[in-house]
Length: 83
Image (cartoon, rainbow, N blue to C red; front, side, top):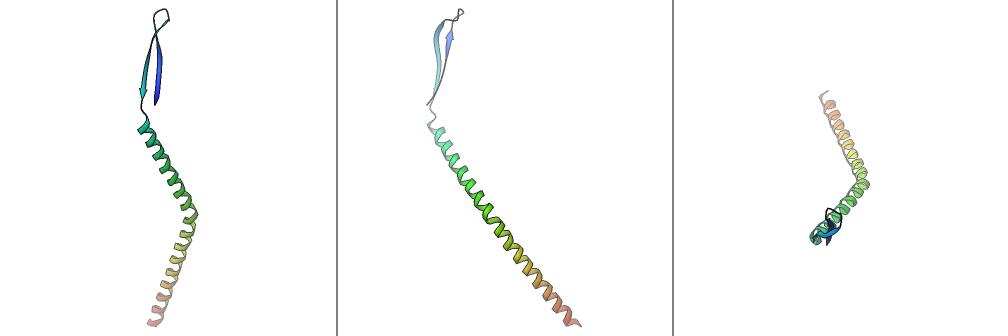
């Protein structure tokens, strides 16, 4: 529960009353906790990605290098057969 209040004063600045507003923030608090949990999970995912991404990139580079070498070898063999 959130409560805000302020005083009401007369022209002589004597307090003559109070104006207040109360708001139930139960649902808002639940949403805030859910957003915080999702943000935490996202941070964990980013950390995991930063660990595994370089490994994945190295694997992709290796595969592309092997494919390139294979294509060069096949092209070389085809060229040799023509002569």
